[in-house]
View 1: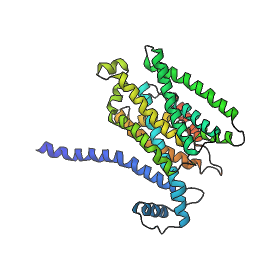
View 2 (view 1 turned 60 degrees about the vertical axis):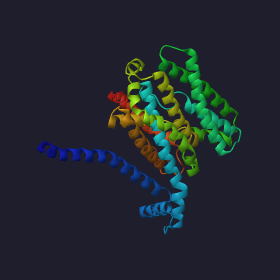
View 3 (view 1 turned 120 degrees about the horizontal axis):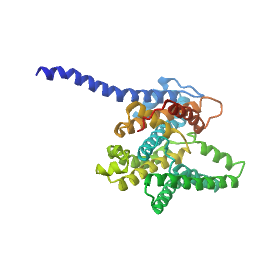
Length: 350
């Protein structure tokens, strides 16, 4: 009885610590979202932002300034929502690929999904198709690229399936890159080529809430197996022989994980363009914070990725008069961080 009473405060303390570990990052993300909605060329007071959001959620009339309401709801809210969804999606895909391939340098485009999405989008731009058609081609191109990589890997049938997929991804990516270069040469240098260049650098400037809603089902479908089978990813990261010895059917699970991560990546890239380094760097940070256990790594990566892309988008539209493409900022932040990882000799991914 005495032991049970003595253990109660310790149990309460552990629960409080666990709640703080979840609640504090979520609170920080909420504050970052609020800051992003309030900051820009047209500053909006925080109380007006809260009033506009509350009126929108409750369906009541807002007494905030009409200009502030337009800026928050029609200009900044779609960008912030897109940053949250895309950042979380790319980070989840990056954590999955790095664990699956047991390689710290793997990113969501390792199997050519970004190159395939780029080729599809650029083809739509060259053909002067509507925005929805361009996004659809980008999504289809990303899925088709990974399907081609798996077809090549199945045809080669090497002993190491992971190495085969990586090499097939490099080869298919090179072919898709050549197709992208050819379309850039054939594109109109005054109208189409600037649009192609801007798409390849990634941006949230043209994202709408309808676009975010359109990609949510695909991203949700891709995240379902990652969440339900997250404990099996820990076994997959041990290697094929060890995983099979522990009862995991790697020939079934690897294509499932790859398909899920590819679906998430293709959906995200289809509306924002190619945003590099997010899926490479954010999972590293999450591993340093919570460890390699995929059950904790997946939600931590998604939370960090969402906040990271919101912060980068805030910088992109605040640093200069002309908006800076997201791909430039993510590279400026990601490359030094990767060099620091190499210099410090950290191996938090394993």
